[in-house]
Image 1 (spheres, helix red, strand yellow):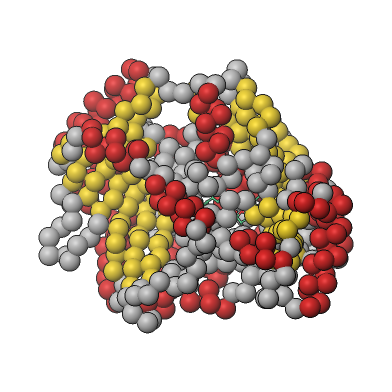
Image 2 (cartoon, protein in one colour):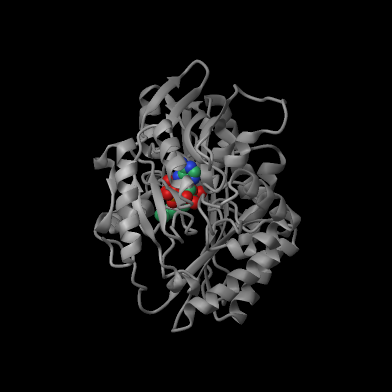
Length: 471
Ligand SMILES: Cc1cc2nc3c(=O)[nH]c(=O)nc-3n(C[C@H](O)[C@H](O)[C@H](O)COP(=O)(O)OP(=O)(O)OC[C@H]3O[C@@H](n4cnc5c(N)ncnc54)[C@H](O)[C@@H]3O)c2cc1C
C-alpha cells in the first residue's frame, strides 16, 4: 500500500478492492503501489500554480472496468459508502481534473477500448470512452474515414477525456471541437443509473442533455460510450506556411480569411517575441482539406490575402514538417511518463500558459496589454498564438528564480481577468480542473450557482470528482 494512506484507509481500500473485484474481476483492481501512476495527470509542479505543493492525491483503489454496466455497479457500490469517485482517461489533462483530491476510487477507463461500429454511410462511429484517439483515427483511416479531432495529445488522450474537456485539435478550424462531433452519449450518473441519448444530426426536443457531459470533467457523470460524427478522408490535403514581419499583419490576413468564409482545416499562427528591439516575425501554418476544387480555390485565395497583408510564402517543406511533427510533444510526454515521469520541480524556473477566447476585435488590444502586464509581473512571453479561429488567442510564458511560480500565478490571473473584462472566456480547450477552479465565478457569475444546483440534484453527496470546476 502507498505510504500516503493511513491504516484506516488501507483497510477501507482492501474492502473496496474486494467488492469492486467481484464486479470487474480481481485482476482489474489496483491497490498499493500500483495506484501510484494514477495520482497525477499532466498538471506538473513546473506550472505557475504554487498550490500544487499542497495537493496530496489519494487514490485508494483503481478500478478498471470493461463495460458500462460494470461502471454502474462500481459507482453504486462506492456511492453507497459516500466515497469519492474520479474518472481517469489518458491522464493527459493539463488542469489537474483527474487528480483524486480526497480518498477516492479512481475509475480508469482504458480497458473500455472497443470500437463498435464504423458507419461509412451515416458517417458515424460508436466507441467506448477509453479508446485512445490515435487508435480510433487509425481504425477510421483503414475505412477511408477521419475523426476530424486531432489534438497534440492524439497519441495519449481518450475519447472520454476529450469529451469531458471539450478538447480542440489542429483540425478544429474546419471540424470544430470534439463536443461539436458528439451525436450520442452513454454516461453513468452519480447514483449509478445510466443516461443514454443518440440522435442523427440535429434535434429540437427540449434541452440537449448530452451537453451536460461535454466539458464537465466527470462532475455530472462518467461517459462510457459515445457516437461521434466522422468525415470522409479528404480528396486532397495541402499545407502552406507564410511568414509575416509583424504579428498584426498575419492576424489581419486570418481575419480576412474568416470574413469571407474561408476555413482552412488547420490554422496555427505564432510569434516568439525576442528582446523587443526588433518586431519578431510570425509564422502562419495552414492546412487545406476537402474536395479537389475546394482545396485549390482556398490555396489561391489565401495566397492573395497573405501576400496583400505582407506575408511571404516560406515553402512547402517547412509547412509539411510542421504537420509531421505536430504530435511530437505528446510523444515525448508519454515517453517521459513511461520512464517514471518528471514530477520534481525542475530547477531554474517555471512556465504556464493561457488559452483565452476574445472577440476578434479585441485580440490585438489584449496582446498589447499582455506585454505590459507580463513585464510588471517579472514574466516573459515565449509565444503569442492564434489557433483555429481568430478569436482563440494563447500566451505561453516563463519566469525564473525562486518565486517563478508566484509571478506566473499572478500574471495568469491578471490575464484571465483581462480576458473577461474584454468580453472573452478564460480557456478555450483545456478545461478547468483544479488549476482554474478559482476563476469559475469570474467566468460564469450566477451561472456557477445554476451548475451547483444541477450538481446537487444529481449528486447530493458530491461524490463525483469533488473539487473540480469550482463546483
Ligand atoms: C503534450 C500535451 C498536449 C496536449 N494537447 C492538447 C490539444 O492539442 N488540445 C486540447 O484540447 N488538449 C490538449 N492537451 C490536454 C489533454 O490532452 C486533453 O485535455 C485531453 O482531452 C484529456 O484526455 P485524457 O483522456 O487524457 O483525460 P484525463 O486527463 O484522464 O481526464 C481529463 C478530465 O476528464 C475527466 N474524465 C476522463 N475520462 C472521463 C470519462 N470517460 N467520463 C467523464 N469524465 C472523464 C477526468 O476526471 C478529468 O477531469 C494536451 C496535453 C498534453 C500533455
